[in-house]
Image 1 (cartoon, one colour):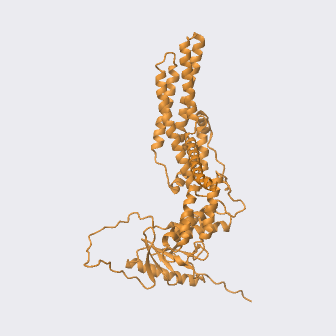
Image 2 (image 1 turned 180 degrees about the vertical axis):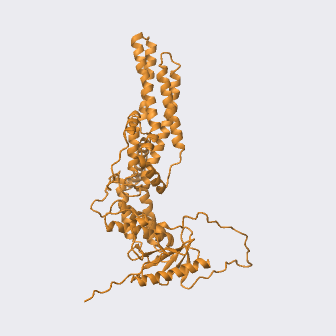
Image 3 (image 1 turned 180 degrees about the horizontal axis):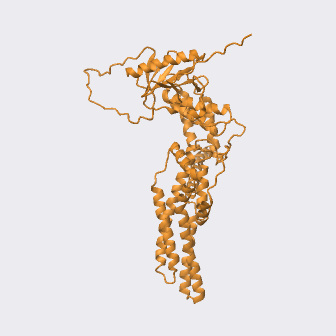
Length: 488
């Protein structure tokens, strides 16, 4: 008995190039320009002439303003190319028919809930494509692909890879939310409790893994409650899809549902090769009083397992800039103090000049670092941190530490003046007036040291919270007093 011949599956034509939603060129319009021109106002009620489209095709507007086109024919197709251009229109229709033929030849049954995205290439006779399935909320293609070809992260299981595909699905929905709103499942009954838990987790844990701060969660909950009342609005569909895409990416990052899930934001889950900053950094960090090591650790917290979190980076940047400003102000004041000391007899000129030089370095580095633009958007911050990780954040940690470290050195040198005066007072039997001036100097120097060590930002925040709490308590007492009197 002869073995049955194996059925050969025809390959996907090279003219069909698989892509993913996040690779869309809708936000990359480099080189594209429009030329506004004069126009004619028609008599009577001015109306624009309708521009006709092929059967089953309609135009829609994405909430951000992008015009796109969708077809209800099989397969349901969507594209954001200008369908009023006859050449592009012909390409989209032709490639949609080609996709149907390829799927049929490869025995692929396209679900009724699937949707095809097409974008003709600008130069070659080819098109980028992908499918989304609204029932399973995922993306798929006509042939097999490696995750590296799409730039997708590595995973530990298929269940984790589902979050990456779900992220791509929701990215597609936020780009094309206006034509099938009534057929989408936004899962708001699931999304709202997720943000409620995220807000609680942020308020009760300093290292919560949730991607939004508690205040942001509260604002999003207000928006989600409104979206629940009107779930078919394209505007609501767009922002809900964006939140779901971020949440899907976050679940991939935290290894949600995996045996080794990330339960703490600072927890390292992925096995990375161990890297050290080296002996030069260690020596420089000791010379700068350990401040670079502190900044290196904080930068590492912003880049756990090669992922940046928006509010973590924002808080780090705000705190660091605040420390630079404090170092600038304190260094300027300390430099004036050292300049006055040079006028007092018996002052060590060497210590005063050294302290002035340290103050100058702290001031100039504060100004240089404070004037440098740093990324604010999380994607740009991720690129910055990835480049910084090339030397384990050693260069940036040393640079960020200069204002604080040199100010501490300047403070220590200024305090050392007290030791010089004490030694001269003992050896030369300095009169009482000199002793009093020395005590005043020591008191001022110690005050400067204490002011340098006080965390002003945290103190201001604590005082502000205490004042607000007292104000709310006073208001509640004043409102409850009339009720008590009425009951009495």
